[in-house]
Amino acid sequence: MFFPISGAHISPIYLAVIGFFIGILGGFFGVGGSFIAGPALRAVGLDWNFAVGTDLAHIVGKSVVAAKRHRALGNVDLKLGLIMAFGTIGGAEVGAQLIQMLKRAGNVNLVVSVVSIAVYLSISTFMIWESRKTLSQTRLPGGTVKGAKAKHDPSAFKHVTSGIQRLRIPPMITLPASGVTISLWIILLVAFVGGLFSGFLGGGAGYIRMPSMVYVLGIPTHLAVGTDLFEIIISASYGTFSHAIKGNVDILIALVMHTGAALGAQIGAISTQYFAGPKIRLAFVPLPLIGAVIVIYTLMTGHKL
Amino acid sequence: MKKETAKTLRAFLIELVIYAVLVVGYFFLVLHFLGEWLHHLETRHRYTYGGVAILLIIGQAVVLENVTTLLLRLLRGRSE
Image 1 (cartoon, each protein chain N blue to C red):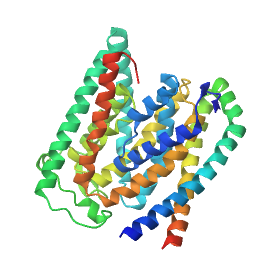
Image 2: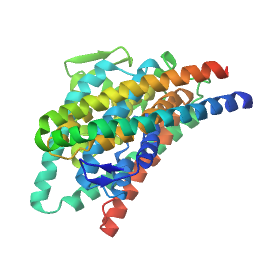
Image 3: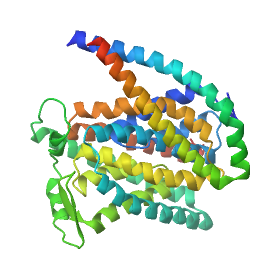
Image 4: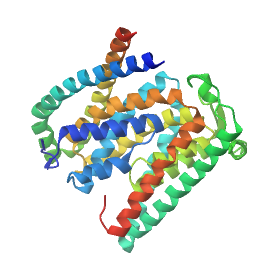
């Protein structure tokens, strides 16, 4: 099928199937899935700039579906999501500026690749240690995990998280939906760092934001997934608009891709209620590792996936 | 338990088929009616295109979410 905006010929079935699988990941883990969507769009000949912008547009749609489903399950903290959106957008702008600086210095690819590999490997290593330790120490409740049950989320890192929550830097924000009281500045810092990586490494940076919300802010895993998706709607819409005015978005491709993602996101979101927080975190571990493998491949072969 | 899993799987497969038919029809409608207009907007009015792009993807998300929820409810109701 011909898509006139990007001038690409791509099978709509391929787009819907890719969207479906990324939708499941998004609904279950609260990530955008750019590390798969980008290479998948590139593989069928879409230019890199269109792959990035179009993926962001598709992420908006998928996140609307998944966040709506998570909200029905009681997994979205609207107050936290709105506050984080400000930090994320600010961070994304600074990240994009950093990229421009590195481009001028002439070493953008190496720096971005090394930073991303280090970040991906650190997240995976830490999460595998924490979730395994938590699972070995705790007896998890049976049945479906939603509502009040989702707020009971054991973590081997809880003592550090509690220490961060005790930092009284005004103004303090109470988040009744998540059962947390924490300084506004810490929320903004977490969102800013997520946005910074989003602008610096591309994609939605859910692989950083979701774990940060759990380990730094102390948000229960199910709420972190749902709130991250809600927050992504705002930040990815901003990114989509920004890319669209630069001519990097083929909305027709995004619309077709989203037909599969809408179904996948629902399945992913519904599935979270059958898994306890530490199990979701353990299952999350391969995602940053896949990201690291893609970057290492790109570094070694020179082919950008 | 096995019987329940089989029921859920069957409901899901039926949903997938109905959804696929709806989506294929939708592909052609969207590309036929919106393709040229969106292309024109993208080349001539980028800011409008950016706004329309976001509205379209959010609008589609809301509609598809309702369609999949309705399908799930109908099929789950029938299989139980």
